[in-house]
Image (cartoon, rainbow, N blue to C red):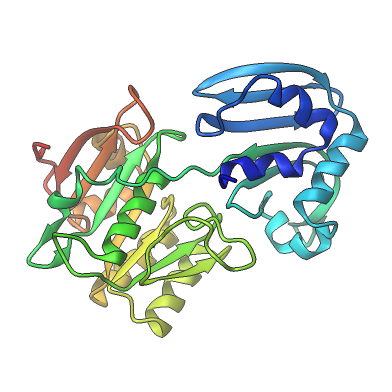
Length: 303
């Protein structure tokens, strides 16, 4: 059974049946949205499809029980961030009524809708840029840019895998990953469900800033990877890591290099020439399509 096919094991038969009648190819399935008293919606090959089945409260609760192995309490820490990760690396987003304590989300009182994001790996999607990122057996610090949903994390994951395992351009490197949202490794019970390479160590469900400092102090990374940077605290931690001689691979939300230059915090990283490569993913074509690559001075590199 393919890893992606395991997604159907968390669905009640009353929801799974109507979906499977659509003859779904899980390689193209991106999301399943289940909302109480609403139809099921799929995002399939980039297009939304409605399934004519109205979800009951009992069906949504049954789905949650399957996701958590009948113990939502065990996932309480993850759920505070709005999601949980299941076997296969699939991510279950949650919404509903939350319980607030000391100004922070403590738990959910009611969950009324879930978004099942199907985990996809695209091995080899970084092949095109890998030669541009290595010089004298060293990986150049790189920042991957795109709006949401265009494959930043997928591209980062494949870079991590190839750098960790080694390739024709360099020997394998020790890579540490701070996976704050459990999307890079897709860890389930602490074990990555995605292939992130044999020399990779992961801190799962850990805040980026704290995790970066922990990895530097304890795991001696050659390369440190994080997803979706943007805050001033992120910038400070990345600057510290670079001063320690660690190569950073990261992603950020931006349509272009020009937009990045205008963002507070990230602008500072650009002006200080912290990253030597900027990889901009395109809006057209399949997920992970490379639109431009720039050097630290903003000069475009031919690919």
